[in-house]
Length: 632
Image 1 (cartoon, rainbow, N blue to C red):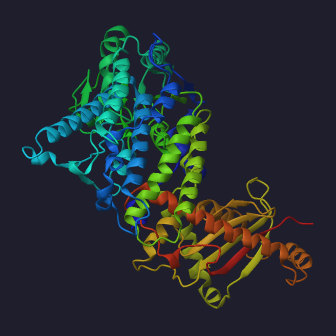
Image 2 (cartoon, rainbow, N blue to C red):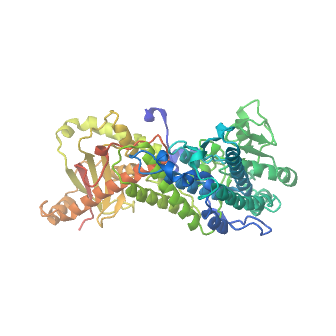
Image 3 (cartoon, helix red, strand yellow):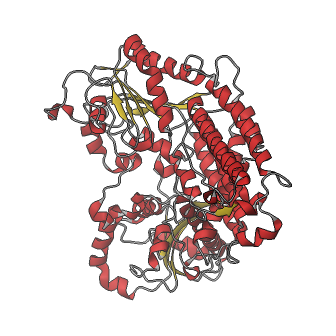
């Protein structure tokens, strides 16, 4: 169905297979090296630095979200979770508090205004809880509605990762009479301490105005420089367009309102705002979402063919959230600013893909990234630690039978996050492609139509020979001199025993979400034991097969003779046994890693049943193997 309904083409894929089309459409623009900006927060220097605030926030208790800590001993049994669940409600609250702290930092990284809004909302929640507790203490019988307390871990910034975390374990209700409110473990005292800490930060954030906002000042410099020295595109037109992305709607609104008079009067440009939920504004044309994007990118959006649209004038500065990070052609622009960094690097690539598109009239495209600090280790370590634990809680809440132990899952998730962060840090110096994130499942993996047509033709021409062919067939081929990525080694093709190719029963779905070739696996192992491509890279391995084998009807006799000589006609296979073991180890490791990544992607993901999961002990059939060998 995906083959019939989708066309999935990456930049590298198009460059490789559609060279003639690229030439006709004008090609891709050249990616300039990204520019990294590390702004301060407050020009006056009164607001604490990001690093200092990071250390401070980590130490906060946020007892507002930790009522389980104050349950009286005689009532603790009433708040125990099921015996099957390895996590208590106290664990959940601890991890969610960690997520709230991360959210504070993400909001500060976005803008001091977003941080101010978050502080104010959290303080208001604390004050509401204090009032509820005091009403209960004063007249408990007159306020029966106050007897039951439900803590809501809301997210004022509408952060998708945090919203997902808030679902873990559902909402939990407490009776105030079961809690230590003002003696022993004094909740009211701890709430006041939390409020005092947050009030200091709220007032400090309030004191940072648009005139003293150091990050906003850096943004204005970049926009002003672009407008003052616009680039010239391939058709001789000047281009002063700037696209600014931010993760949060209130940051986008703050930027629009703060830049409005300066941009329109001082720079003389039109600007617009596009946020999810319908908040759209513009100084030119109509406000609807589609019209704003068309007026920002009239050539790519073919405005000339839309009679009811203005044909003169256009928008040069667009401030947007990730609601337009996918599926939009905005390549009239050649300059994109990430005002905050989305911590999933794939999202950054998607944002840049709005202007880095085939058919762009621009010679080059520029990416500018605002980073909260030059030393990201503190933030990354905190976030990864919390996310790994949150993923464990989510798994415990949604899966009853899981072959992986909690510690193992945490290690795998942490490893995946470390890998993702390495890719994120690479964005300081280069623009990455989706293919650089080979351990995530992408739509292009399910549309292997480039190879399927070749396969069908081959099957029709060789059906009789294939039907009688035994498992374990192999041959030897030389590396290709034009492709440095192809080195001496072996490509193994396995099939998981007990699994049927093309099965459509319910159990095949989860496995196919991890491995698009299920139940078959391709692994390319080099002679030194390093895995060049695991089963997460089916396209790359199939490309190598095509390069080395397509159209070759006769064996490379000299290489086959050399193989026989080195293995004593197959009786000494120790070297290839080692490569085989490396391939199987790679299968198990990649399967676990992809399963963990899938669990983090959303609640719709389902782990395959235990017997369908791939481990070192899983029974695999060796279907074929291709020996890539250099001559003597």
